[in-house]
Image (cartoon, rainbow, N blue to C red; front, side, top):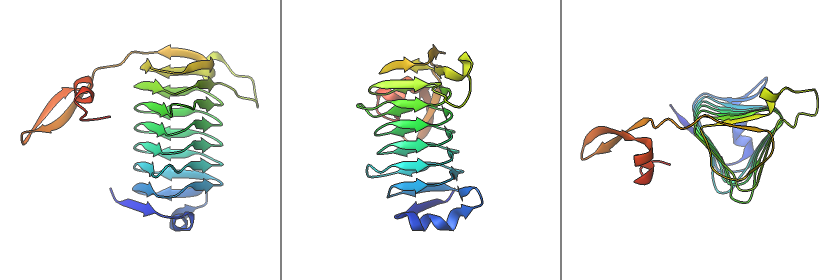
Length: 192
């Protein structure tokens, strides 16, 4: 999958469509982005150097979403992989990640509806899920579902831990591909 590098917001214009921006590949951003509508990236989205992502609509990536600063969306934030922000993560609707969700040590997470990740959920201060102000919500819509809760305080919402599945990962070892447990790979600093 091709990776596109963006050094200023005007370089993003090549990906403009009627709904906002759509990138068929990975997006490596070296500046802050402030988008009125949605940002859809088929691959991974990476914001470097402490910069932020802000969209009036949604932020969606087929792979991971990572930013040195805050990640904000007026609607939802969704990733096929993990979501990681150096500061806070905020969405008007929901936050969902195929892997883990992590916000900086001094910040938290806020979502109008539910927060879901398959792996670990970590943040520094407070988490709010289901702070929907435009209609009544049910318990499912204010649920924070994760494999394992690892930090911060759930200020509003219902926490549901599903447990981590110790899946296998493939690594190269002495020229051969081998499978080891995810926890072992993390302990050896082979993966995040």
